[in-house]
Image 1 (tube, rainbow, N blue to C red):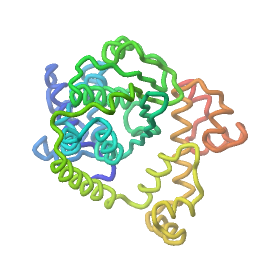
Image 2 (image 1 turned 90 degrees about the horizontal axis):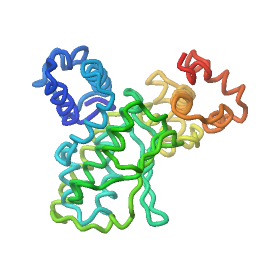
Image 3 (image 1 turned 180 degrees about the horizontal axis):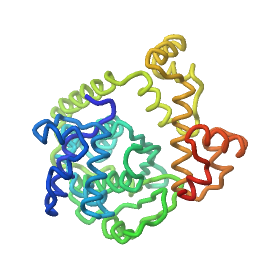
Length: 332
């Protein structure tokens, strides 16, 4: 099983969408491992590299900038496999959210979310998204899939959400308003969905405590399998991405991953990487996202990724990426 991977159901829906527009399956699969095996070779999950290539092929073939929104709206409860089945057995939406927050890495291992309830609203904030696909696609897919799933669970086909995304308004923004409603906001500091907290108490008609226990046990087993196969470096990267803006020192990360600092360092050495390299990789990812998708001043971005001085950040960023912050922000 790939270390970072996507459920096969999402890939099959994407391929079906492109084929419905008259494009050949071979063209969609070009450049992926599935080009050799065909769909009969697909397992339960597909590598992020293959998914990114499929998405790139789909964009190139269809020329549809709203592909992510349309794919998300096709992701119903059955598309989420065992986790979707577990959702349907929950008592109410509050229990669904608790389950989702425990097991969403089954849907996207590289995704990190935070959830809070305050002032009568629920906020689901995106800390980081998978880096293989375009940022707009990642948010469009995720948020429209969440919307579609909530509509199906609550039997509220007209449900609208407040949506905030951390990038400028795209040329196809009319699709956002058509999908989500009028409460859509671009150029946010972070991506976020919010809705009325009263929805958490909505009872679900298919609630079944015994079945939910069985499905949750299966979710826990699948998640353990995913995490077990991850290299220590991958586990550390995942944790560092989740802790954006904090960036603990190596001993703290080691303890959080249940290693002694000595064992952690030795395991990383065996994998041919240092903690500093992992830290720099994540800081570069976070800085790049801010540079490309926000209007924050350089000094603020420097501070957010752990620098007190913008000039030191410029030098470090050039070293990490081979490009200057100005080049990345300007698209050069």
